[in-house]
Length: 530
Image (cartoon, rainbow, N blue to C red):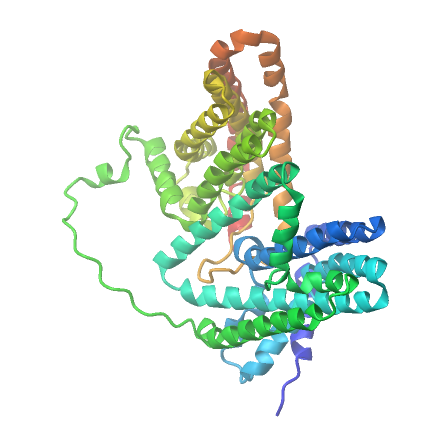
């Protein structure tokens, strides 16, 4: 008996409703997420409709294929890096059900099309139809409509096939760790690359940019979004060819998805080769636990444990890699993109981003935090050890950021003062993030599924971190004013003054967070336990 795709739609809607039932905070954040999706949709519509409103066909030929290509890339990487696949409709959940493969593929695809991302994408790209109608009339509008619909289908097929294929490839621990790090590097480089591209476009030869857009328009990335412009320009022969390219690529992606979905459902993995035997470690257990230079007490033990977690645990390591990539390439993209005077300000933003890795520090452990609770670790000691382990990796990154920023701007004499400003921003950020990590803790996703994320509440989890980042940036303004007033003397006092400023702020935040931990240990354990 044939199975309809409607149960998949009802299943997703029911899961969304049940996830919101009786949870006012999650309802509020779902509304916030819907508002952001609406802003993206309206903003995208206006951007893509702007060439039509201005009746400027050349800008339409550049904006539509390049903007559409960015949308396709976003649909490729965003599910892998940030939001993940809807865990309730994960193919593994249907492994024991007698659902035909074709029905399963169709149902998962339709379920993806009824989500906010697909709806926002469809509305945003509707501006392309508006532009095509203004430039070429009804025929161009129909061609553009066919293009955005086929483009959305391509995005869904690409997103699902890539996540399914990676779910299979990431069964082994080593490959999963490597892929996560590489994907974090790619994601972190998107923002700096965009700034660099915008800076280069200010000085670009628009004939060259037009040629690049035309080339992209004949690739699967830009083909569906450029058919309206082709129809408006009288190139009707290009419309069926580009739609054929899109449908052919989408068909290949669906075939690839069908070949990998069963392995993703079954979770099959091959056993890795045996590791070579190594010589036994003859050191005493305490010496093997503690890192060199740390005291032989509870602070040293906790700091060593956290440092090993930051180095070995995939998600934490990806956070450090992202910080390093953003910290180095964000100022560089500003310096080489035509705005070297803004590189220093972007470096300060990096200092505010650095503490965000601790915004949910207890969520990494989940119910394992009960061990610290049972052994009676004081709250202040907990905070100090975790912050010290994070600083072991973060402070060298901040030093590298200061060095790269000022050397690329031709001001090597400002490196020490810039490093002091970064330390101040980092300390203030820690003072804000540490209490947030206690007050707004939440469980991290189960790592058995490489892309499983806790459903719902994504905006709720991000807003406190964004608030801490903004607060750290604002709280560093007095230090920047002092640097402006001191003039050349700032080159000498910037580092010690910034260090003292950040250390004082961290001390106050650590005291507050430590007291909160002592009062809320049971609540904290319940919050991070899935």
